[in-house]
Length: 304
Image (cartoon, rainbow, N blue to C red; front, side):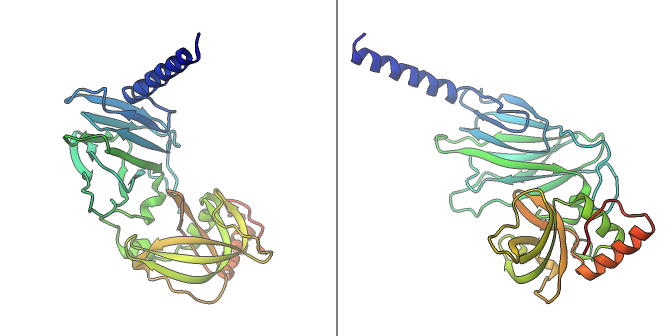
């Protein structure tokens, strides 16, 4: 076969691959889904089911509708840092900054509630939206494509997270929980449980606090003198004395920089550290010592 014939065959193979990718939907795994609306009929609804506690959805060229069922493999009784076990599941979705071409609804027992609307080019980035689901409650996410003459530049994409009821103390939703509940200090039982269940447990000092009005959060700059545990590489650095990292908390809590050593605990929320319990380290030491003497500590921690 001539060189020109080989080149033509290669081009046809490439075109068939592009055509197949553009007109077929596929699930990368049980956590994420990526697909195209080009193969969907205008009034059709494609059913999708994912089974992880976090993942992504990317809908290229939205057309028709998607109905997404989230069935994470979580413990039957979700346990929060306070030791409660209500069975409540909290889910959050974080739309991409360029979310276009569809509207995202929460479907609860057949009733639709708008979470994210279709964006204009000049619109600000959409916010994280959170909702809760009780055991036995039928909840799904419903994406409805918005009719557009040109769909070539439109992608409806978001990340999702599902957790136990630890997010009762955290909300980035447009209807946040009360400041009193979100910002109250943890009691000793909650502190000791947070040490066992948090994504990060770090001893450190507050270097500064920066307020982010757009995120409606305070970003706490932390110098970590000891990292007991971290699920992700949140606190890093080359210093022999301390690592550095950031922890976020709700803006209405009014966190200010101050002297002293703290024990920072919390959860990772869409790749960012969010504050749970943060007692002064000496107060944690006292509570831990008393609980250990009474054989009531839920887990061991090498306390100095």
